[in-house]
Every structure is written in C-alpha cells, then in structure tokens.
Amino acid sequence: MKPVFSLLWILVFTVIARGQTINTPAPVLSAPEYPSVAIPESELNIPVLVDLAPFFALANKKVDTLFTSPKFPNEWVQEGCDTRYKYSFRRGPLQFSLNNTTLDISFTGYYKIIGSTRACVNGKALTPWTPACQCGFDEGERKVKVGFSVAISLLTNYTIKMQVTRKEPEPVDKCTVCFWGQDITGVIMDALKKELDISRADLEKNYGRTDLKPYFQTLWNQLNTPYNINNMGWLQINPQKVRINSIHTTGNQLQISVGLAAKPVVRFEKPGTVTAPVPHISNFSRNRGFQVYTDLVMNYDSLSRILTSQIAGKEFTFSKAFIKKRFIFLECRLLGSRDNRLIMQVKFTGSNDGYFYVTGKPLYYADSKTLQVADVDFDIRSRDALLKTADWLFSKKITGEIEKMARYDLGTLLATAATNINQQLNRQFMKGISGSGNVKDITVAGIFPQADWLAVRAYCSGAFLLNVAGLDL
Image (tube, rainbow, N blue to C red; front, top):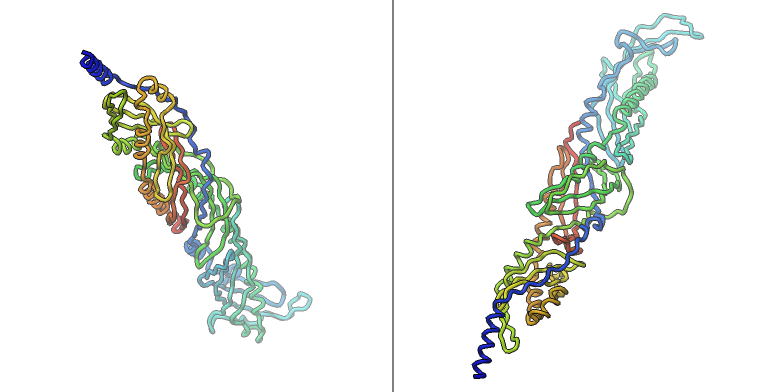
C-alpha cells in the first residue's frame, strides 16, 4: 500500500502545484529626470553664403545715373571772378569687385562741359565773358574712372556695417579745347569730387547698416520649432549660442562662417515651441563642420514587442523533489528603470502560471551597433518571493535566456536617424534661405533608461551650408 500511497501524494502535489499562480511583488520604479539637461552642447559650424547679386542690382537701380551742375543747362557755376561753367555727368553701370571684406565699386563716368572766362583784377571783371566754349560735345563725351571702396564688417547685433571711401577720380580724357587751350580737367574733377562725396554720404546713410537680425530671429525660431521626422518622433534643435567665425568674399558671394551651439532632442511626444530672442553673437570653440548630440527616444512598448517576439514559447524543464517542472516564456515587458537598470516583467506558463521581475543593464556595442540588456538578474523583491514560494524558478537558465534574447539592432535606427537629419539639413527654411549638408558619421554616445522610455544619445558629425539668395529686398 505504501507505493500506492506515495504515488497518490505525488499526484496530489502535482495537481496542487500546477494550479498555483505565482505573482511576485512589483519592484519600486524610480522616476529619473529626463537627461536633456545633461546633453552636451552640440556644435554646428555653418558657412552662410549670401548672394550679393540682388544687392548689386538694387544699388545699380537706386544710385543716380545723372549728375549735373545746379539748374543745368540754364545756370552757371561761378567759383571765382574769372571762370564760369556748367556740366553734365552720367555714370555707366556699376562694377563690383570683392576682396575679403572689402567691396570695390567702380564705374566709368561720361561728362561734358561748357564754360567761358574773363579778365579780373582783385575780384573785379575787366572784360566781358568770352564766347562759351565746350568740351565733350562735338568730339564725344569725356571719360573718367570713378570708384568707391566699401569696408564690410558684422556687428554682434547682426548688423552689417559698410564704411564707404571715395577713390580719387582718374580722368581718361582731358578737356583742353576750351579757354584758349587751357586744361580745365582739374576744375571738373574738383566739382566731380563734391558730387561723389554727396553720393558717398548718401550710400552710407541708406546702405551703411543692413540689419540681418530679423532673418536670424526667423531662423532661430525655426530651430526652436519641433519637427516631425517620419514618425520617429519630434526633433527640436534647441539652439543656445551663436558665433561668427569669419567673414570673407568669393566672387559675388559674401561668406559668413556661423557657429551654433545647440542641444537637439528627439522625443515621441511633441514638445512645446520655445520662444526666445536670438542672442547676440558670442565666442566659443571653433571646429569644422558640425558635431551634434541628439537623444533618440525608444518606447518601452515597442522594445517589449521585439523581445517578446524573440522569446515567447521558449521552454525549460526543471526537477524539484523528483517532480519535473515546465517553464514556458509568454511575454517579456519592459516597464521602466531603477538606478539606471531596466525593469522587465516576465510572464510565464507551464507547471505554474504567473509573473516575476528581473533587471538588466543596457549596454551598447559599437562594432555590431547592438543594444544589449546585460547582467540580467532577478529583482530583489521577486528573489525574496520566489525563494519562499517557488525556488525552482530561481534559475540562471531563465535570466540567461532573457539576456541572450534582449538584443536590439540599432543600425537601422541610426541609419534612419541619419536620413531624417539629412532631410532637415537639405530644405528651405524660409524664402531665400535654404540649407544643404549631410551626416558623415553617427554613433551612440550613451544609453539613459527613463521611467517610460529609453533615451539613446546619438553623436553625429557632418557638414552643413546655408545659402542666402533671392531675398525680397
């Protein structure tokens, strides 16, 4: 009877054990702050190419083409007793030449003059005026080369300052046919200088300072605006500082090397738009291209689905007091974090049903671009509960299988992030301002477990160029 009695008890215990549900207490999750405050400042060094052709065209349109003596041709200019004259001067097209931060404006002037003389002593006329003689009429207009030199500088408040200097006129043709062969070119040049000085003052008054701050403010606002990047999340550049590295010219383009410090973040939830005035230009480190840190947010639900798809159905058999125990994975769900370790709930079936909790350290392996949940172990509350109720579950086979399967290929995520960043670089920000660039390298700089999601801090470097052309002037 004893063998039958023993077998009966084994069957009873088996039925009782199979019917027992094992649910361990949930671990206490921490609520770490979002690590955006710890994001290192990213640096973007942006060559801004400003097409000056529209400005040149505007100057050609705005600067007068005809200069004459007062009330020409009816009245005379008389600076002394013995000479009087009146003239007409027209300018040819303005020619522009750039050399670093200096703009040379030159043009050929065409002039003609009518004049007469008389004899004077001590300011009193002794003879009447001679018949008027002229220069630049029958033989064609006389030519003179005229020019201005403009020194360009950018102030810290985004104002382009232009300091205009008049060059000395260079006569190509001289007037020597009037006044009994007298060369009056010098007289004409002196009169021309006065007109050019008036034009120089007018140029400085109207174009001496060009305020670019509205354009930089618009760009600053654009950088603070969240952008949806192909359903990966919302990108916000979060600019911090602006620096001007250098200013020089090439061809008809003004190249301003702009440095931007920023803290870009990608989030699943759309952040609010930041409204802030663009700061004054400041100084900070100078590197080529851009070096950007950005946080890519991975949702725990999506990570859980991936892990469950890889581990569901995996089965282990254990022996406990001559009784075989079956353990079958149903689901592994990531819940959050505590002390920078991920918390996972493991649901199972088999000899028993239930769930327990494990923790693991997220690590990134650059060679394979893989996120690995390593050092998987039972949560302390689950450990205590299992040792009291179902110590057979306390097995490294289970934690080892979870660690084996909790691997995530981040290569696709990084490639997609690079593609999305490239799309943001290569677009029109506003009318007349567009960007072009590319990401050369992208890698993971850190993993930050959060309460509801996993932040993957990516570091990328590349080149970017901002083109300013076709602005409404």
